Image (cartoon, rainbow, N blue to C red; front, top):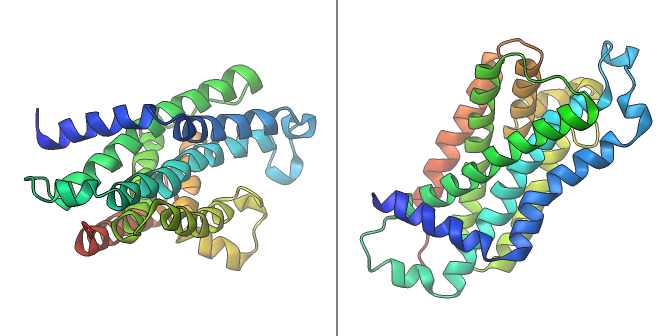
Length: 246
């Protein structure tokens, strides 16, 4: 077992010991999807949406919410909390590198969001008869890239925030705007040209667009895949470069 595997396993166990993290991380997106699905008009086909139902559009957005919850709230708070408690200072004396620590955090969050994505798709299908993704490979590629891109942004906060409270504050500053451009309050289909362009170049906006394309059976646009890959590389490199043990 490698150091990365051991650390990822330990981080996963620590996550489940915190009831607040478990409740928010695993409960927020399913509750939102169920609440939206219970609105009768959201289950009716709309001519403005090309015959789609609003709830169908919100399934990828709920997946994006799950990704953002872990990437921008839980992940930064965990690492910053370790820093404030001196755990990172002690860890510095071990062979563990910043890349290993941040990689373990990202892997743990990715594993959680994979489980959440499956649960959300199952809820959408069983409770609201939402169609399953038609392009499964495209959907998985989009999901992985969206998780990596958003997680890399969260890692920058984790790398620099001195305390869990500051990490929470910075995370919230990023959380709501990124969800806005992902289409949580205004679906991408209803955005004007300026908002849609910003959405296309944001990690979650590109992620939702790719998930929607794959759900409809198309292959995600290269622009959106490139945007998510770019965020992953740049933000991930910055997080590793500016990581502080103390």
